[in-house]
Length: 204
Image (tube, rainbow, N blue to C red; front, top):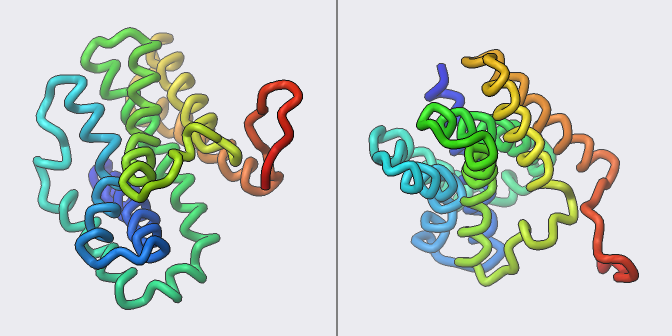
C-alpha cells in the first residue's frame, strides 16, 4: 500500500513537471526530464544524503510513472490543464505524504529530529526546485507566495515531534501528512502567502 501511495504521488508530481515542459515549449525528451526530476528529485537527494540506494532505482514503477505521465500530457495536455484544480489537490496530498515519509525515513536512519525534518522538506519540495532550475525559473521555494514549502515544514516538524514522542508507523505518518495537506489546501483556498520583508510591496 505504501508503494502504491508513493507511486500515486510521483505520478501527480510528474504531471506538473510535464505541464511545465509544455509551457516552456520543450520537446518530449525535455518533458520527460522535467517530469522525472519533479517526481523523483527530492527522494533521490534525500537517499543520497542518507547514503542509501535511492528508492527510485529499486522499482521499475518509479521510472515508468513519470514516463506515463509525460505521454498523457504530450497527447492530452489541454485536457490535463483543465483538470489543474483537481491536480493541485492531489499535489497537496503528495506534498503531505512525501514530507512525512521523508522525515520518517531520516529518523529511522537515526538523524536528529531537526535534520530529519529538513530532509522531509527536501523530499517534498526538492523535485520542484530541480524542475524550476532546469526550466530557467526562479525556484518557487525562494518566494513561497502560496505556502508550498511552509506546509511541508509543518508536516515534517509534526512527524519529527510525533516520532520523538514515541508515536511511530502509519498513524504518525498519516497525521503529519494530513496536517501538511490541510495547510496547503487552506493556503490555496484563502490565498495565504508567506510574509515579505517589512516595507516591501508584493508583486502579483
